[in-house]
Amino acid sequence: MAQIYKPRPHQAKNKPLLAQTVVGLDHQGRGIIRTPKGVRFVANTLPGETVDVVVDGKYTATLLKVTKPSAQRLKPPCDYYDSCGGCDFQHVDLAAQVAHKQQTVQEMLSKFAGIEAQAWLAPLQADAWHYRRRARLAVHYDRKRQQLTLGFRAAQSKRIVAIDSCLTLAQPLNKLLKPLRDALAKLALAKHLGHVELIEFAQQPAVLLRVATRLEDTDKSQLEAFAQAHNVAVWLAYEHTVEPLMATQALPQYGTVGALLSCQPTDFIQSHRQLSQTMVAQALAWLDIQADERVLELFAGSGHFTIPLAQAGAKVTAIEGVTSMVEQLQQNATVNGVEVDAFCANLEQPWPQQSWGATNYSKALLDPARAGAANAVQEIVKRDIQRVVYVSCAPDTLARDAATHKAHGYVLKRAQVIDMFPQTHHIEVITLFERE
Image 1 (cartoon, rainbow, N blue to C red):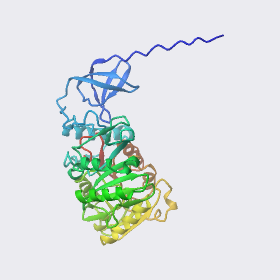
Image 2 (cartoon, helix red, strand yellow):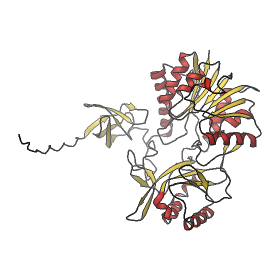
Image 3 (cartoon, rainbow, N blue to C red):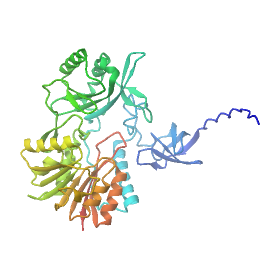
Image 4 (cartoon, rainbow, N blue to C red):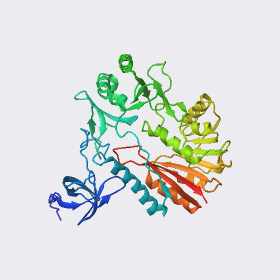
């Protein structure tokens, strides 16, 4: 039988839902509303507010209007707030931002680990604006228009919002945005840029260009002129190598407690130009290092915690998964006159296979990425490690790993939010576990 095509009727657009009450915030800082179709999460809203929204997804809705604002609501000072995907908490009073972050950690620890800190210390805070010493900028080159766009991604989108200034970038980086965009737009390299990173190091700011092709001589000359005019170091990141624009460039350096550390411009460093060292000082205080005490440090990087630990008298064994960073850590130890045992290892592998895995340690410090440290914590709790400082940037994986600590007799003695990312929903927290 012949099939007669009948076009499907157009889906009717969702009707706005009016006068919805925001009953709380989720861990991403989005407002929670209860609609006839179930719970929905709405960005840019605050508890207690009455809002008009339109449902746009299975779990989300878009804010149309705030009809009854919260007393904690502020007018975002950034011109790009409505379009840029970053700094999504600018509409929230700073004290309320930090209170929400602590509450989020407390709720996750309770829900997923059944654990509560015996003491919550007052949050560690510093500058809330122009604090950010590292930023990745998205790049797009329109070949038809021969136009370069440099900026940040829009929220939940690949679209790039071109920016001339950023209120959270450290001022030396913020001042580079416009001249850097103008300089890059003139290069043949503009067609082959992946992304651009700005980093504030101790000596001078750095520009890191992710590129897919070698520089032409003309581009090199223009970049050298830009670097000299603005007192910046330019680095080129190819697929497998990182090279300085000029052979005379020294490795960049950043400060930690009691030391300057060299690193590659691609290495991880903490974002907040002040709180990165405050966090190290707090970790040292909580660990209470005694002379010649054996301390295990995991996810060590190029030595941000390692060198201060060794300077405090610890015999540090530092583990890092990137070979080049382990080598740099050893060099940093030598330059700063301390001894450190540094190893490159995959911490997801069983420790008994590692030469350092059979050593006895009395204390441990770990600062993992968002994925947390599930296997590492399983290994820690098998050993006679009495005190563990765990720094986390993801409360959900912290809660998972805290449950492992609890199951093996550890108590969460102290916890403290470090407001490493003001004006955003992102959370950093430092915790102290002790075995009873």
